[in-house]
Image (spheres, rainbow, N blue to C red):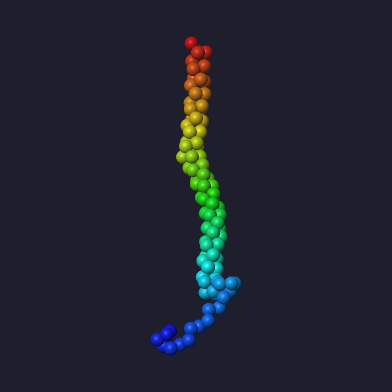
Amino acid sequence: AEWLRLPELPLPLVVGELPWPTALLLGGLLLRVLGGLVRRSAVTAGADRHRQQARERLAGAVAKVARDEVVAPVRAELAHLARLDAALSRAGAGSAQRG
């Protein structure tokens, strides 16, 4: 500014020796850090909720597949085996009565 022959501008002070530009810079940095902490906690809470929902959906899907692909066929096979056992018992009882 000296080579333009302009006078030095007065620096407005906030408190004591702290100039306004410095106070605004520090305030902005502080707000940035606090905003980041608030956003982080909000994102973490949302992620926890989504993780729980995904776990519940996954557990439900696994249970359905297990029920449809494992439990139902095993039950059907056991029912068939029970009918076969009953038929063999009747057949064996019938032949024992004749013999």
